[in-house]
Image 1 (cartoon, rainbow, N blue to C red):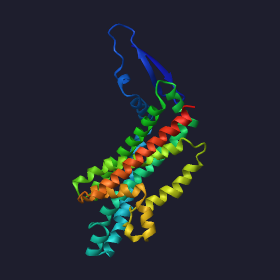
Image 2 (image 1 turned 60 degrees about the vertical axis):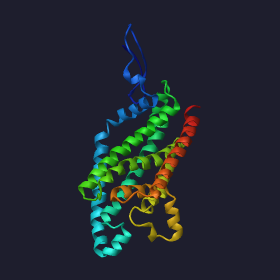
Image 3 (image 1 turned 120 degrees about the vertical axis):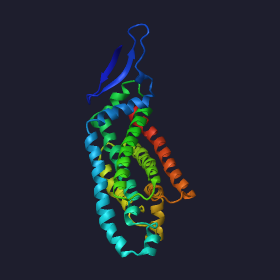
Image 4 (image 1 turned 180 degrees about the vertical axis):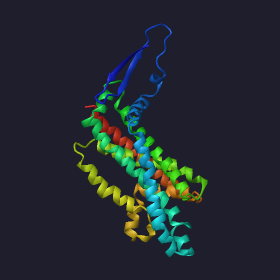
Amino acid sequence: MERVERVGVTGAVADVGARPTGLGELCPRRLSRPPWVRALGYFLFRWRRTFRSTLAGNFVYPVLYLAAIGVGLGGLVDHHLHGGATAAGLSGGSYLAFVTPGLLAGSVMQIALGESTYPVMGAIRWERSYETMLATPLEVTDVLLGHLAFVAVRVLTAAVVFVAVAAAFGALASPEAVLAVPVAVLVGAAFAAPLMAFSVTRERDLAFSTLQRLVIVPLFLFSGSFFPLRQLPGILQGLAEATPLYHGVALARTAMLGTPWRLADVGHAGYLVVLTAIGYVLARRTYRRRLAA
């Protein structure tokens, strides 16, 4: 079998196709995969270089968060709150169990931000890997789906590690806590799709740091991650409940605390699914406008 290859500026090889050189020879199995899977394979290939460091980071950050906020600060909170107040304010459990779902949702939100901003601009302006992939039979939609799927893989691995660390800390109240992993992936997709739609339109990276300071950090602090939203004034509480992170925290908390699933949880999931769909539609439009020109 003779392979036809194209080498991009990053040094990674993208399969353009293959042609049999003899009777009875079959094309490689990978060429029968959906095109977006081949794009995903490119991002996974590149990730091999930094996989160990990112996995270590995915382990270290939950340990630090849970130790400092869940155990350290949580010890003070649990000491000053008594039975009735704790049950009413913290869903009937310890502060560690209450804050862990918020930390998980906030962590995957920040991972989605990191993978959907600078890497998108880099793939267009610096490394030009999008251009390399589009020089093959891949279409713009394939590139978008492949990159979005890679972000989902990143979020998935981080969520699995986080849940494992939380279990080691004794922060999980129910075996249903494993459902927090798909919830985390949904949260990551709900942020990644709109962010990619935005990032592909940028010529400079100044907007990304502004987005981090003025949007992501306030969401992390005021979406029910660290305290019940009922502590906020009515107007701020309504604004917080309209944010995607709030819905992700609520879903993750239901799973991790083992509380009965309610109709409201269907609404939380539906909100995130709709936001992901809207983000994907917008991203497909902005990607085509930028890359198909």
